Image 1 (cartoon, one colour):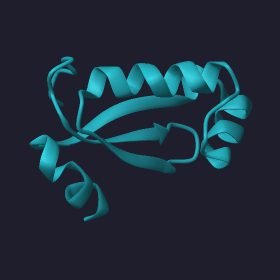
Image 2 (cartoon, helix red, strand yellow; image 1 turned 90 degrees about the vertical axis):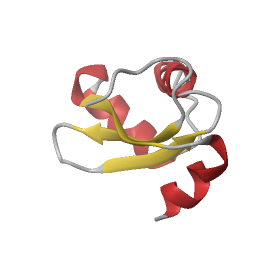
Image 3 (cartoon, helix red, strand yellow; image 1 turned 45 degrees about the vertical axis):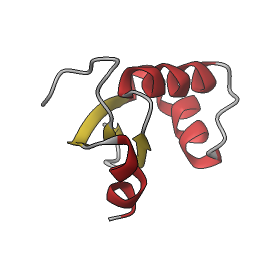
Length: 83
């Protein structure tokens, strides 16, 4: 798996280690920043995705990993995420 550096852009997944479900997204401004934003919102119980938030509340931080699925240029992020 590629190292998460602030400058890397691409498609990622937040994977639930307990049930295998995934939240897939893209980061056109850096994967590290996007991961920090997700973790912060989840810790504060303010994530916009209610299903991900409910799972986080149930399983805690230990139940999730952030995985880079694909590196791509910023303009390719949304099309590759939707693929």
